[in-house]
Picture 1: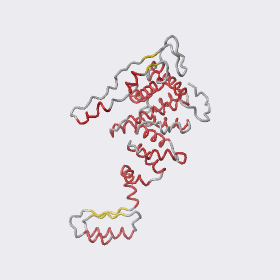
Picture 2: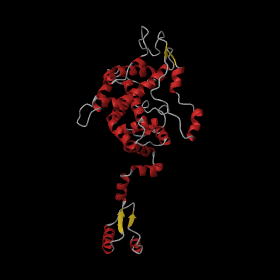
Picture 3: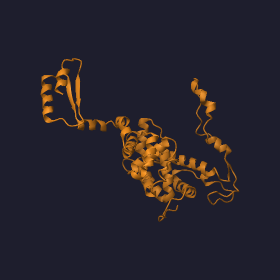
Picture 4: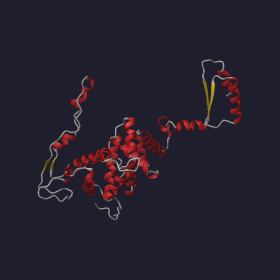
Length: 335
């Protein structure tokens, strides 16, 4: 260190000399540098010890994750994935998620980690290959949904600040909502909405604010259920509706990427035909009489009638989803 300080004096272009160590500088070393700095005002000598480096790294989590994630253990990957999501609204590689899934029974997966894992899955596609909510206890699903709702406004603020796609978070909350209403009474879900959608002054959000945050979740959930529940139902003809859900043919659009005009995106409000045989019975046992239509298409995901909507989707998921192993009935969980 003394040699470096003395040599740098000869180079007039150096303004600052950093001396770093992953241990600690001794007091005599610091005293020597302080006396040397009195004699030579330039360059400035900076001593970065282990404490200084850790503090600076803590202020730059993105840099740490990019440089050192490859050498982490599975538990380290889990912490990195959690911090990357909650601090930066960034997603980890699918290889990291696969590794965590393989070793999930040996890892301490808390509520923050579980929500981050689910959001990461939707960022990479869907949740089908690694169903995190299905692989844990109902109470853990409830806690993850509740935590996500408590942080809904925070997440939206981060999304607006960073400009990332809100789709994975919306779909994660829709998935957790459906997983929660599968095992718990809808009154509990309504209470979670009431508790979480409040202002900083602990006042209920205006109805427009509630709709702004909640409607994307409900719309995503209803759209998915309408498609998958009616796909094998004798009441429906799916040809036209499936065409609506399919993405555009890449052979028709590929070469447009080399042009100068592009292709207009598919409108989100486009309509499609839904042919329903009202004389056929419901596949999952909805009591439909007098030529009535499918409740999944009749019910509206409105805030004022949220309990009715939750009751409808609860009936669907309980009829369609695989039974939980050793599932125990809870008092008041039907509805």
